[in-house]
Image 1 (tube, rainbow, N blue to C red):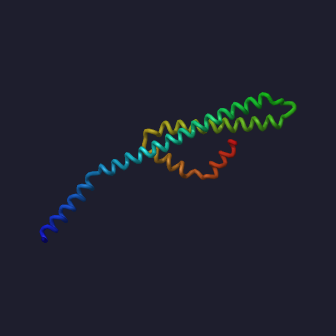
Image 2 (cartoon, rainbow, N blue to C red):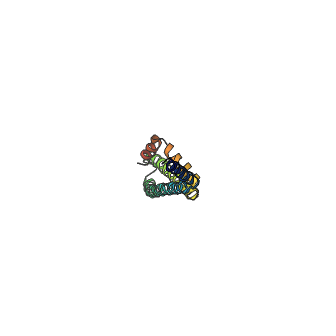
Image 3 (cartoon, one colour):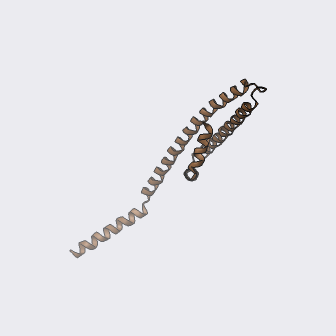
Length: 135
């Protein structure tokens, strides 16, 4: 009976060492993490494309309003429209820079993790402020 306990203990130790040496499980978890990060970046890229499309339409509306506004009669309105127009242009430029960053980092897992951590560390007040500036 005592020999069987020693055999069982030795067998389980052998399985434990085999499991530690064989790191396929760890590789599979890294692959799963990479897929999750890829999905996260794809969703962020889709949001960037949607916001860019919305802001491009907004930019076109502001341009048409500023062209049709009489400069002599409504100078304050024209300056406000121009200010909003250039703010929208800066937002579009920022989104396009983010898009290029995503395209560059999508094949590098370490950059994806850094990008995800950057997204998680953005204060919500900044995101809310950008949302309010758009509308």
